[in-house]
Length: 425
Image (cartoon, rainbow, N blue to C red; front, side, top):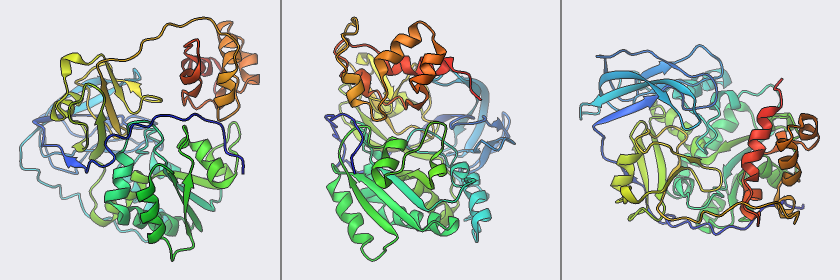
């Protein structure tokens, strides 16, 4: 089967052999009420309340949402407005920790006996996609169409990030347990654990673990960016094409991140909701790159200082990888559920943009066969009908076109702006 286009990157997995370390308990946390796609939560605690570890502190009546929990015990000192890196505003609960880390009485293993009770438990866990997208997991696991294949996304194709790889090395039993849990509860017959070829130790371990289970297929995918993008990994794993306007479930597939599936297994065993995250900390301003497990709501500043970062030298701070990550506008912003890496950069190449030379490189690398240069031209004259013909809505913003452009044009960014012009149904 022909693999989709993409680019070869220097993956710079500097921390792949760095075992996860625990970040010390912070003096305070600031926990946003929106850390996922969908409706934000509203605080269900008030200033002065005492809270415990694992206690629910935010929820919403909206179906497309996920509750928020505290990762610390202590006192609520403020409820403030919080602006995310995307510009959205929600409430945030500030908690001063008491140092005791008293676990809430709410933290008990859920009773899971069938699909309905499982999906209820998944929602109560606060789970969302830990690969960075933040799609509420209980929604993803409850599609309207029959599913025959579960794809566990273990590609981790972005440079620098090794958080998912450490999950595979440190918690393989949780991953296999999570796969079997999801398969059994949803009645899915087959699973494909898809791993990039640059992770041979993980491939070897899981191949041995699944040797006697013909329902779990360990796939080795080429180490080629953007292998972990949803449409790409579906095609390269199954040969199925998710068409414009479709969801993966329309093709009989669910894709779930490898760290998410491991978390679900742990939640069913312990009842502890999603209150911590493993992050890769790297970049040329970081003296001690690490993989760190940190309580959600801790500030990026504290995490970077923990890794001996030259704070004053930072010129760019990126949440996630360099290809699809978001610029962090404020170093004191809190770590959220979807944070999987932070890159602190003190020196980088700022290249000037020039006119398009019509070389076609952007077309040759686009995994979905789009024409970024033509989209760029249609966007500049605001030709919505042409943008529709050019299928701009298929763009997944992987950044491959921007990466290879010799004129240094910001094609991926323009694609996102162009998508905003098209009315949504």
